[in-house]
Length: 211
Image (cartoon, rainbow, N blue to C red; front, side):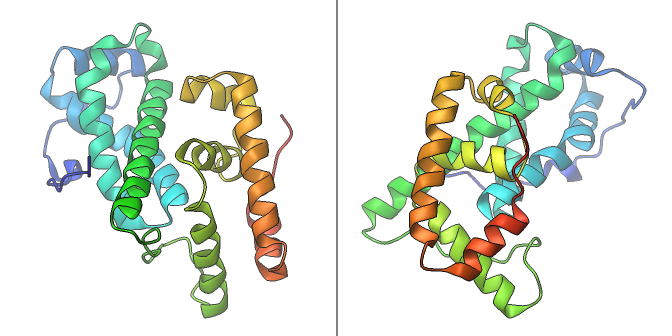
């Protein structure tokens, strides 16, 4: 379902206790401590927003998705078995929320008999019009990938995560990650074969690191 419009969590005024560990914060969140809401946002929102913006290509869409991520986080934090792994848990919730949003977008595009939505303004794009056009073309290609392939590709190429890290974050096997990455890379390679400028941007901007 579409992400609803809500007041930004960042505007919620609550006392914070920045000296606490992730484990203590997780326990406070599970207990419903009011201060933990603001502290969790201040501590983890930059991570969520950066990942979402790189995947979606839009700052405003990333902010909307972050709201949903934290709402889901507060509902699910009591299921966290190891409070010390709160950061990994937050990232896992963010990735699952991102996949849900991408599925919704593909379904919406299919139901309305039109292509994926155009890329809104992104803070990651260059002021140079040519560079911005290249990024719009890149995100148009990413829109054609399946939600899982797109998330795997983004985590690998933009976030520089290892295959093992992606597997743990997304809750899928290493072999599935490798197949998904290979599939996404092969399709993108075919699509950009006739666009040397876009190929250069991809190689320059999304450096691949060793596993």
